[in-house]
Image 1 (cartoon, rainbow, N blue to C red):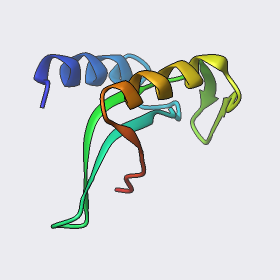
Image 2 (image 1 turned 120 degrees about the horizontal axis):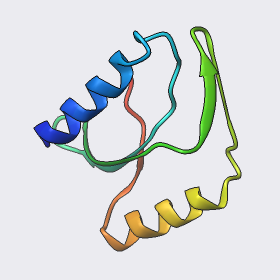
Image 3 (image 1 turned 135 degrees about the horizontal axis):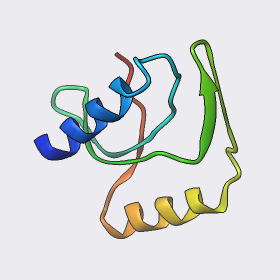
Length: 82
């Protein structure tokens, strides 16, 4: 885990007291042996939200760029549910 990045993210969400929904696209690999997911990168697209909703543009051209970079790194968009 990149602890510096994790600390920056926690500081960011604490700045609004966890009162906003956020969306992030996760990139990594599925682990066939465990059925789990290994997340290697995150892209957070431009978005606007509140405590119980989030609005983001799924057609944002920056997402295509993030997908292309992930592919070059042998990563794919993955789904992870807590």
